[in-house]
Length: 115
Image 1: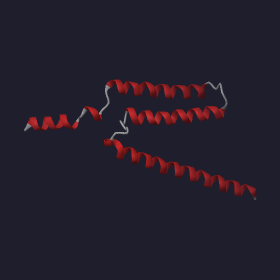
Image 2: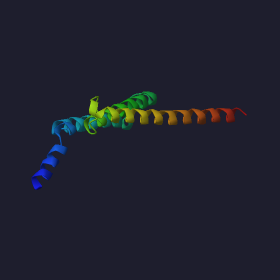
Image 3: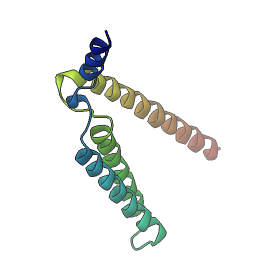
Image 4: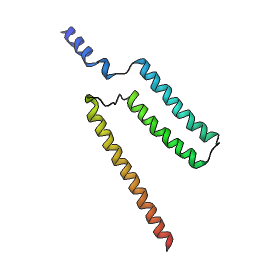
């Protein structure tokens, strides 16, 4: 009975579902780089504020992808398809809520300041 439990544990921890040490280290190093560059640009401004903002936003989006791939193991495999679709839908809802709320607040502010 102990062997069947042990073999069940071994089957539930398939190597395909977990990353290797190398993949975790690649993700970690990429995360450090993707954090250090925007941090350096903010702490030591060498370009315009608008360019810095865009670079920070782009690096943030790339870092989200790095975390999803290297730490959460989301990929285009059939096993992860439902997770990717759910994540994409949640991202779309968030973008719509934040974007449309910002648009409404900007429109209200503009209309109120015109009077």
